Image (cartoon, rainbow, N blue to C red):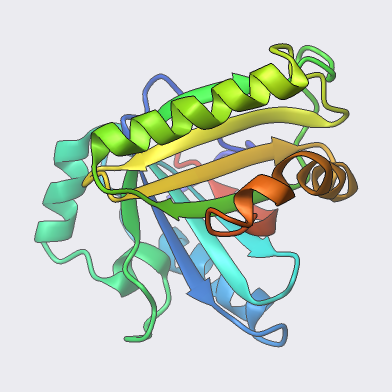
Length: 220
């Protein structure tokens, strides 16, 4: 199978109905090896028709690899899992200690106004996970968080280097994924320290910074 050279997935892809997100622990010596294994595994197999893209990210602290797979159909993802989609099939890494990937759906996306249009290529991806009781609670938490940010910082979100913040809710309603895009890691860190750290420390931490490693987009 051949692959396109598109460097990044479009998080707000209108054809993407659900995303499967997994994290693979890896120390600094293994991180590149694990990320390469993910890419190699998916290059060597037949993709389900509904799988739109798979992207691997490496953490800046050298301790994990994150996979973000876009699917055009929740039903297709469920069918793939039921038909033998193991952790190995989903991440490319055979390790019984790897947490199972979690399916999410994008709930809200907000974009910054301090970058050019079209936006530059993102270089840093702050990722954070938060627990929730159910879908209603998850939506209320996200809405409240973004409303508080707008009241404090302004609706235009004119943060230097801030491209987007993408808030996802797991299909079972028990997990919230914040996946942001920034031009540089230094700009992301400055924003987290100034705006989010005091609040999010009480809610589960500010998460982990990731860097893009490789995206796969099969040619149809």
